[in-house]
Amino acid sequence: MSDVAKVAGVSHQTVSRVVNGHPNVREETVARVRHAISELGYHPNSTARALVTRRTNVLGALAVDTTLFGPSQTLAGIEQAAREAGYFLSIVSADDPSPDGVAEAMDHLVQQSVEGCVAIAPQRELVHALAALPGPRPLVAVEGGEGAGFPVAGVDQEQGARDAVRHLLDLGHRTVHHISGRSDWLEAEARVHGWREELRAAGRTVTEPLPGDWSPRSGYELGRRLAELRAEGEEVTAVFVANDQMAVGVLKALHEAGLGVPGDVSVVGFDDIPEAAYLTPALTTVAQDFTRVGTAALELLLGALDAPSADAPADRTVPAVLRVRDSSAPPPA
Image (tube, rainbow, N blue to C red; front, side, top):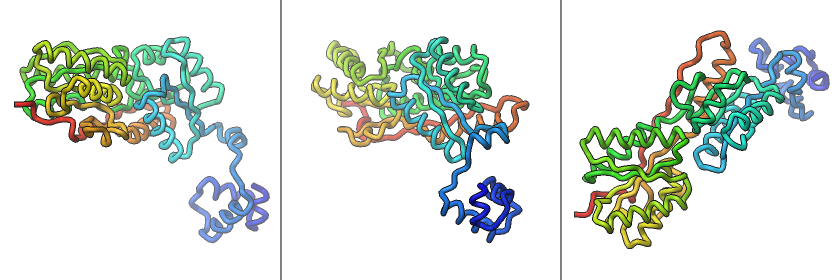
């Protein structure tokens, strides 16, 4: 910073004011300082700044199983929002959602002096483990469900499921089968609830959901089961699948069984993965805006950092959006 001051012909304090965005600096002075910063390749020393301000400008992010589309995209949204807000993000992945696994991962973040943490917490066990931890605080959970004990940001999973089912009923299907996600995931639970409640509200038959595990393989196996049920005489004309990756497996299974989509069976997924629009047929699905979720989570966390003694900020819910494509149509006559 002293070198920048010499090149710009200003005081060390003026450089500090420019770097920290102080408003009471003349525009020509700001321009000289910024030119010197660029010429010298100066970057503020975050460690030195932390000693003075007692702020590290580092936030933590904790996740489990980031290989899945939803958690990975949520993490990307959080990272982007943190960067735009001027914070560094330290990411740690817990080996499992158990109390020991979560405590070990969180301890790793505490050692890096994070000011607060966002946890991608779609599993009930992970939410319980987070609630039992003494720190760090503040803490915000993404998809943490209701009554988590800390602020939560997430997509309205139930509304998205209801929209998917309503779309299929409006097309003329008498009922909608469901392939669910993993039972220990709050998102899967909310989607099952939304599917069931929309059918009940319409006075339609509610079948037992077929439990999947989010993978294309499980979707394929359960798609074969749906084809068998149809061959046995059960009315199977529409299926709502809890994520797009399983829906990919369902499409393959139905094709192998000689069933057309959507001619014989309509298929609706959830997530709107990038490939969804390019499948054959293009997949009708429910989109989640992971960037908005990440931004909402960061806003909750930064609000808690700025006013630590205030009441916990209200949860943030991002609406899901139905994307109608070619895989859904009226049932066969």
